[in-house]
Length: 504
Image (tube, rainbow, N blue to C red; front, side, top):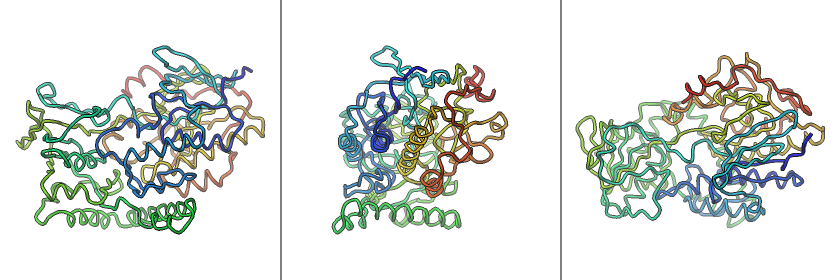
């Protein structure tokens, strides 16, 4: 059996990848590892997105790592502060020297005979190969090189500046300009008040409203606790307060969806001036829980709407014109700049091609195992966060479990592990995400799925995951361990040209 170059390769040096690397280094110090990052810098999402006002959409007492207290006063934090936090973590744990920048993983191939992955990695325009025993994929859930842009007529007619937030021009000066922001999600809700500080005027153009909640940017309890308690203890207390409070809110919402809807819309109506048409612009047609709720820190969006620096336009865009947008109801929105905050393009495993013992894997046919592995993919753990809570809560749990898994295999002498799924398991599948957000619906056909029963059904539940991942047995009977068993994929999981075409 050939010896691989490394024990573990971590893909991605963002919030997840750096956190995972820290767990690996502390809990499995003998493991040889590298972090492959496609960009020339650390940070992932928080390095990629540079648009004005970028901030967290979750409380940093839970979006921060469990092992490193968040010390900034703002709990809804600015992007630069989060990026600095990730960099600090890497430096404090001597992780930067393990990162290989500008390395994009194109494909991974598993060999049961050799008991290792072979990665094809693009570097400086050439393809190089690396081998490892385990792949930890912290590549995120969307394409960094591509944002979603709807097919509206008239793009070529528009004479102003067109920007997608995912690719914000460096040093772009928007002061004094009239700007139209197309979108209703977290990016648009962030951009509108930020741009309105110096723009001549900002129009937020949305096809339909989104639920928005006003909340303070600072966590007063967390800031107070730090004055009287050691940093780690204060952080833990604030963290658990946020976790438990979030669970209770979700439970109340589930028990009374109609009441939650009235509460959310009512809070927005109170935050706006008397007579403002909140029914048109802030009363969504769907129910709470079907999409993420956007947080507005310190009411910044409502303030710029109230004082006239920004306006809402709700309706269907008919076309782009030379000077802006024309809506289906005849309304025209003229703008020097149009920002298309129209969403992400979701992706699994960073879009890598995957083969197992020479068999090409159809990523859309994979079943999700407990939210951290995929059916019949050996020695691969992936890291994604929650949709209904902070991202890093899940990453922390999976990283700790992955280290337990490695230690268990070392003790028992195993070199291969995977969750086995049969052809019958691949039947009656469903989307793993229950959201009706556009970016989820558009990508559903090409993303891994839920099965019909445990362990192929994974709920977005932090407390369930603590039970399964933190306290549950590594070998609970649902994983297959060996020292080199060849893997024969079920027919439904093998990629074909027809499946690829259908997914695209």
